[in-house]
Length: 309
Length: 309
Image (cartoon, rainbow over all chains, first blue to last red; front, side, top):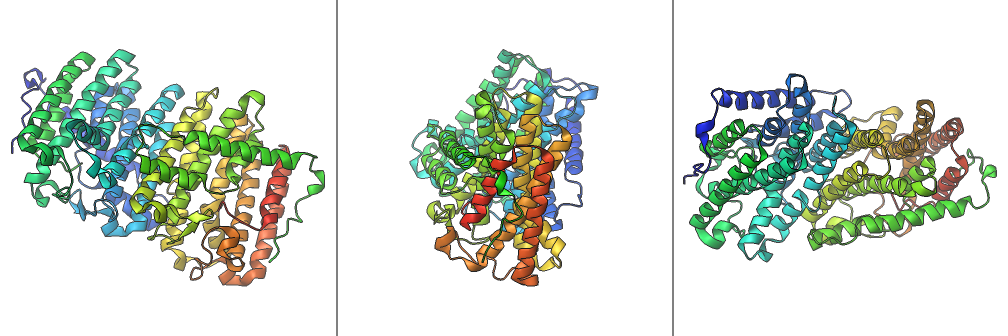
């Protein structure tokens, strides 16, 4: 299977941009490590489980995207990394829960045993709650960020996670697939499962940077289409890859209704390309520095892996 | 078994105070109902599960305590109710998770089937996440409350829930009981399981009211001792009551180390009374209106039920 990024004009990429995206990813990794460094008040088993889940191999798409949209100045890196890592913690919490026996019952995640396999279900669930709670704490405590911005970021994150967001997506995925009948409903599910946290990450970057509403809206539009394309690509990958390729269980969705089961691979590929084209247009409309973001996307799709999913 | 509240001087209670505490509880119930009113974007099954868990029979100790400490003026009720209900949502989320088969494996909660019994494990877990996320959203969006106060409240709540708080308590309770060897370790566990959210509720009330640090510290001290006393009372109740009496499964802790298994009922009773006396002293030190808070406590212990636990 080939995932094209032809809709994206990569000719405009500045030299050194790829290195920048990679540098942001490295900075994110180091920052995550600091955020879950050993604390005396935390039960050791819980601590190990949190570190296992959070520090497993991943491309860190959401925090890198947030950082690239925020374009922080030299003295503002800390807040952009904090906010990005908070989103990564929320994402990781959702992965821990998605993998539970009562959900997708997956064994492998981020190139290693899923958290409940390595630490048991109770500690896995508690790790997810710890990560989720800490994410909100990090946002509340962002240094050198106005309090009005911090409450706005908290609100964005809360809405993205909650019962109209990720939680709704997982509920529909686990208990409501049989009710999905058309493209728009499947895309809505993809949006809730993946897109909504892409959008939250990008929007949080835009809010942190203090962009005006119109540009924030363009950023949201960009991230929404990017997220749906990414989830569709993931579904396509899931049918063609091996577990070793992508570092998590594959074809867990074999009995679920997806765009592919409904309309076949070529329609899914078409939907993917349409969303990618719309993402590109919105990115241009937002007038942020598009080159490193295009680079991030290209790297994601090029590797044809989705380890961070 | 008799739980004494003799340490509390109830002679100072003003007439009408009991009605006030009851009125606050009624206001909390109505506000909770509003906060989980039907929303079109929420999957119906998830919505029902959230309402089942949150609106089950409960005394609403934490939101009532927050409200009584905050002593809101006529135009400030909304924020105190919002903040209190956010704490109640966090508490409810913790109950949903505590009852899961991989944790305490309880069937009955708040006079009705536990959420995973009524809706299945996946929806129960997602309900907990929805409630937790919404709690942080409510705090971020508190109307007519300065943003600096909102971020402080978020931080208090995040720390109370996280891996040094409720989550740590549950991890130790489920996977670490065998390591507990003395009174102080058991009390630390009781503190994490119950006290910490009492303290968060009371502290949030004090912060919302804008009390100075010294009085906030006295409120924290009060709530800490009250919370430990309450948990000890709950352990005592758990050994003497029937499920019908307290509306949840009893003697689930039969094989766990508690103050009672270590030292017997009379030492636990003594510990309970000491904490109650210290709570009273701290309440006096805080110089908040103590009468309705004493009344709340008396009503709690008098009924010798712990439905909201």
